[in-house]
Every structure is written in C-alpha cells, then in structure tokens.
Length: 423
View 1: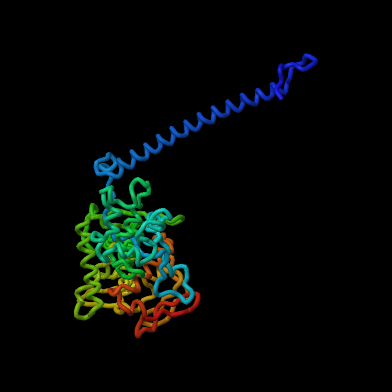
View 2: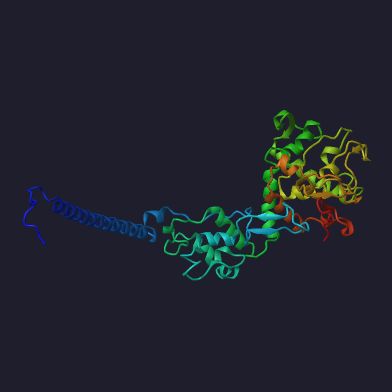
C-alpha cells in the first residue's frame, strides 16, 4: 500500500520511506561502481593479453631484439661429471655403503623433468613424454651431442624451435646443459663408467691439490734447486709460504718454466727407468737423489697432470726419496728405494678416510687411516672423494697391484666392516 505523503497522521516525518530511499541509492551506487570495476578489469585483461602476445611475437621469431642478443649454446667442458640418475653407487663399496661410496648430484633425468617434464608440458598433455630413460634417449644419438635432437633443441638460437620455449622464461642453466652434453658425449648410459669418472676426478685432483702451490711442479723441483742439485740462478726461483696456523712452511719454487718442465719431465723418465731395471738404467736416477749425499727433504710430489698422478700412484713419493743411501754407482749415492711396492701410503688412502691401506709388498695393513689429505690439502667433499675412488678402480692405466695387491690379496680394507677389496 502506497503512502500519499511523507508525514504521519501526527505530522512527523516518515523515516521508513527515507530508509527505503537510501537503500535504493546505495544499490544504484554499488551497481555503477561494480560496472566500472568490470570495465576496468576488462581493460587490464585486454592490455595484459596484448602485452603477452607482443612478447611472444618478439621472442618466438628470428628478427626480434631478444633473438639477436640470445646465445643459447655453450662451450663443452669434459670435467663436469654427468650421470642420468641423481644417485650413483660407487664400485667398490662397503657392504653397507659408507659416506664416500656414493655420488649424489642432479642427473639428466631430473634436469629434463625440471625444465621440460612439468605437468603442462612434456610431463602432461604434450608428446613426447620425457620422464623415463627410454623416452629421453629417443631424442639422443649416443656419443654425438651435435647429432642429437635433444641437444639441438636446448641450444638452438632459432627461437621458433627452441625448447623449452624462450618465452617461458625458464632457460636451462649452463651447468645443467654441460651435464646433458657430457652424458650424451660419453654414451648416454644409465650407469657412469671410466669416461664419466676420469675427467672429473683428474680435474678435482689437479685443481684442488695444487691450489695452494703444494702439489705442483714448481714446488717439487724447487727443493732440488735449493739444495744445489740443479744449476739455477736466484732469478729462477721464488719462495712460497704455506700458512697453516700456528705453523708456516716455506717452499722454494722453481719459477723458470722452461727449466722446470725440462727437469720435471727428465725426473719422471728417470724414476720409471730406475724402477723398471735398476742395473740396466743405473744412470737414470731421480734428480733429487744424485751426487754427494744430502739429507732428503720433505718435498710434495706434483699432482699437476694425469701423468703426474699416475707417477705418484705407481711410484709413491716416499719411495722416490730416503734419508740414507740405498744404492751407489760410479761414485754417486742414491737415496731412492729399490722396491716401489714397499709402500705404506697411496693416493687413495691419503684421500679416503673410510679405508686402511696394506703395504703391497708385505701385506701388512695400517692401523689408522691416512685420509687427511682430503681435508688439510684439498678440502674435498664426499662427492669429490667418491668420484676419485670410482675413477681409481676403473682406470685401466692403474695396475691391478695398486688396486688389489699381489695375487688379488687386497691392499684396501674398510675400517668399519674390515671387508677387504678384491677384484
């Protein structure tokens, strides 16, 4: 029923009518504001869609500014360890694998999953699926990254073909690309082998153990120069201070590169010939042990190259110097030991604290580990140690006698389980 006026029979103002009028005005304002918001939202969406389309057009063509600046390729680096899976159990390992018996590092499968195998792409509705070894290797030419579709998609600068799409703003990191490259180059295997282990392990040793000017050629040959065993001038040498609080050790380094390399290469040749046949090669004696008797100095052997490392393994430094004369010829006194197997130290035992070494000649095991080199010298991680161990036992250039001892008796024993490593 409608009111004819806005006053009550008593003449007072009708507040009910006023309330209804106010509500009506509020609703009109809300409606207008809502329509404005919808209109603004539409404008924003249209602008956003236009912006995204413009980016797509620029990034997914060869002529855009970003395409001209982009370089998705990388330079190969064989020293980057690459495996398909994130976990690699090292062989040999203890019965219950110890902390130096495994390599844990993001593998190719995880890399592909991160960049390509998400639920909206090759892990979802888009084919081919890229989650299993078989699916991924369908895009791979083992041994030849450049001929592999996977590698070409990851590195092409043709943005119409690039994967993952550049406009996804999720470019594969350079380190991850290197892993994929090396994995393909080394055969695209499910399980790593010597081709995967050696470059990475040698790089760890040559960069880690020489980083403090300790196990390098300059320091190794410098001691001989200091003792007058080779003719040098003051300009040929420098002094290096190895600081390990509270002590400081001073090393003489042969800085004359030409002389240093000449002497070191001759020394390695001498060692090999001396130990191959002492009498026939009596004139081939290690530089630091000839001429008049001198007190042998504690000189760190060089680990600057793969060849240096093999020398250290086959002829441990302790066997290349001694404090007393052990061999004389033509008036020269030699401080080398004639039996290169009579050793109580090895490269692996100085790195891996989980194992004990037996003297390859006597068969007597050490009672304590020697693995401080990993920490005091190189600062190696558990992955580094596992990589070195994996390389050591798979490298055919390391004789079995330095892996398993004489007649496979075993020269490495696990401290926890007492299990002896045999072939």
